[in-house]
Image 1 (cartoon, helix red, strand yellow):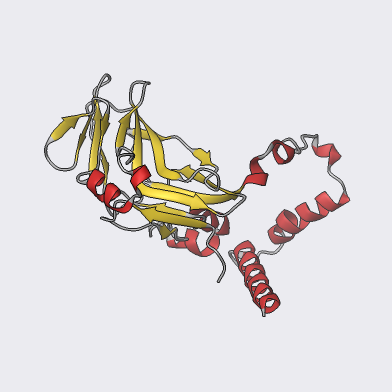
Image 2 (cartoon, one colour; image 1 turned 90 degrees about the vertical axis):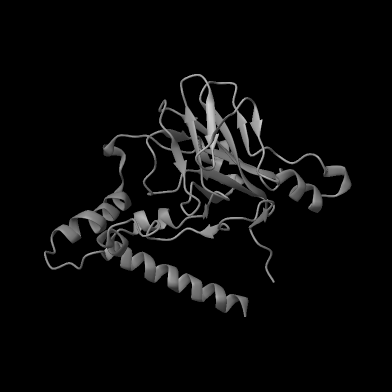
Length: 254
């Protein structure tokens, strides 16, 4: 059996477990987009959705942060722990790790910044990192922003957390239990190194060679000259190529 690329270990098992992100962005994309826009659906399905263990809310008055899991609000002076989280963690942890349960909420040094632990500890296969971000193509609250981050989780087995910046004041920001508030995406460490990111070319359009213009012609000119072209031709070609590659991989594995 092939080892998984990522392992999610749930310290807090209430709520929905991590789930493969779907091509329809949780059913929110227009049907036309799901059917014809392969770029959007591929981005939506890239990774896993992470859900809060239970619904909660955060609110910032410009100076202090408060949190609630129901109708009663509590001031976040420094940190807050999941209800019964310490006992759950210590019951599973070896003796040398007992008492080191990560906090659920941690107030940042910068005003309005809150670190949220998902209740999950994560690790990845060697050479793989995790990009943590807001869910792709899902609507989100205007009251906060999600900091994106890449963690080398093959070398750093620890809590899967995210930093949020509250930007609305005196307005609750809600995080429903059945709505994903994060998307994590596996990234080979090599793709975000300097060797790759410094290899871009920036040139005038006059530098495009014959192959570049041939590709442009196939992508733009040929479809534009065919009024009877089928909708979603790019999506069809990409899906056929993926299916062919999948069959080839399975054949090689026999």
